[in-house]
Amino acid sequence: MADAAVSVPVSGPECDRQNASRLTRLLAAPSFQKWAARFPLTRRFVRSEGAAMFDLVAGFCHSQVLYALVALDIPKALLAHELSLSVLAQQGRMPPERMAVLLSAAMALGLLKQRKSGLYALTTRGAALAGVPGLAGMIMHHDVLYRDLSDPVAFFRGEVDTELAAFWPYVFGAGAATDPANAARYSQLMADSQRLVADDTLAAVDFRGVARLMDVGGGSGAFLAAVGAAYPGLGMTLFDLPAVVPAAQDRFAAAGMADRVQIVPGSFRDQPLPRGADMISLVRVLYDHSDDTVVDLLAAAHAALPPGGRIVISEPMTGGAVPHRAGDAYFALYCMAMRTGRARSADRIATLLQLAGFSNLRLPRPARPFITSVVEGVR
Ligand SMILES: C[S@@+](CC[C@H](N)C(=O)[O-])C[C@H]1O[C@@H](n2cnc3c(N)ncnc32)[C@H](O)[C@@H]1O
Image (cartoon, rainbow, N blue to C red; front, side):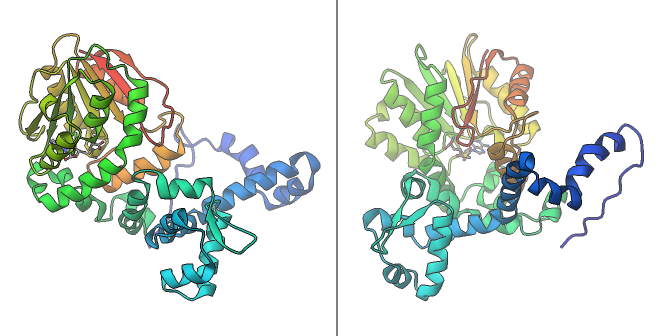
């Protein structure tokens, strides 16, 4: 474990002892906490703050309960049948008393419930675990991020040789991302979770009047297939790495869209983007890359669009000046573990778009910031 010694300046613009001292120190004092926990006007607040603090303390156990449930396929099994402890223990190959601890933990987290008969069933939240596309896959690949975060101080200091970066080999450049098996693995994870992202992007952006949409870094085409289904007259271009795009052919053929889509293999780091589209989308692409790569990519998008052409960025974003849990306490860490990645606020993305020459920026309020947020601009 890395040492956590801190040295702070004793005075000056970087250290305000006066402000920090009064209320915060009072709140932290055990004697004040003891009094506030009993005083009728503060009692409820102190209890709920205590419970919220304990949730943070125990959050890593909650994640592992979730992981075990999914790894043991319990949500899927309970979607098909309500089951007894002994059946679940047998299926999980563990003693019933240990399975009972897991199931009680899942009940405490609101994922399972137990009938009077003793059978276990899914709650509404548990049903999401079984049914939300891509959620199980996302949870299962967290074993990698969990290892990367095992020494969090070293992680934040940048001293960990993170494993997550190897899961997304293109962060090391297009030349490192030529293995089709690896490309298929990450593309499947992305495609599985794309439906919700596409739903929220379609709700935030009006694609009417667009003749051709080019999805850059479009993976195996799940986003274009969703937009193409909603806008039957739309022409489409998919641009992604050569190891990735072959999977898109089958998707578009199965959706009866093959004649509407042009598939262009290539790397936006090494070549200009194809022209001919009047709208470009970048869905969950910018946050994989450093500012330098993003500046070049947005300039390439600007060059590829005609005047009046539109650009849409859709990806999970941070809260900027108002940090939020999904963006700032999850995606920001995830992107950091990818090494080249960086979660950005909508304002920061809007600034980068402006620097690339885009105007008329739109930042619609996201419906579900943990799924995606959107920023739109016009060339
Ligand atoms: C996180 S995935 C997102 C895929 C898809 N847009 C989605 O949301 O499901 C990032 C995509 O960018 C592609 N990509 C990364 N580097 C690239 C490059 N240099 N040129 C073209 N595509 C690239 C990857 O192959 C991958 O499909």
